[in-house]
Image (cartoon, rainbow, N blue to C red; front, side, top):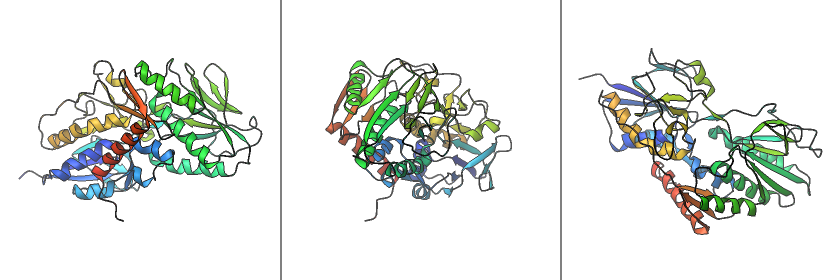
Length: 400
């Protein structure tokens, strides 16, 4: 009998949830699985705006990685990877532990390139031009709840009757939804404060990948939320009084939501893995790392090389959105199993169009798929049901 293969899942993102589910449904006695993650709970990105808007608890947005690992017969270690040696087939964890592997997969998400001249700790002031605005980085997602709680505590300290300008840097559906959700919660938390929002996007149009109707519906929702749109403007730095653009303009801000400049995890730069210019792991069409047999990557941390061409999207530039990790998950599970058994791998084909459900922070949502778009309260309820079903498929039933 051949020796047992050791499969190590690095990170507990959406794609790896499908891998664990697949092995729970069809166990393989020839494969031992280890999961390394910074936590035994993993946030589902689709539900994060719902939580930010105060429509659900943080726990209701999380996948129970510990329970899912147990169902799959996998060993979970709650210490993230900090180094990997592809040649010696070993990964080093933050706790100092070194794990040998035969096959490994990365699903560690992305982080953000923070703006220039930002400060880690800031305080609110009545004089807006004396201090830089308060920065809320939207990534990494795993620690967003700590940063969000810190901001809300600062909001509690503001005097009554003040005026707060919230600027979101980074367009796209996620940027629109996040800003509307945050403003809804802050207005509920402090109704005695005047809140104003601005969405800053380097793209010349709103939702560049969407059709005319979804763009119009989103623009209308932003207007109703009191949000001003700034297209073709690239936020670059936090300075006294607000955000400085690449053209040298100042956009007044007290709070800045930074949701642009996605990059790979910093520790990957010190490895021998092939990375693109943004620090993402280069993979081929089977999700196997380029020139690294037995290593795989999926979700935000992966970049295709050579690029796959599909209409209307160019795969190497897919948005960093959870929907693509979800679509990669089942094929990744099959290919990891095949790699452990030295069997042929299958190619992943990206969807030509994806459905985007954009919450507007007021109990409504917008559905966007290509040229098709519609909105309403029922869309919001539909989105919440879809998200809840997705999380429930991986979690044990909640105990009352």
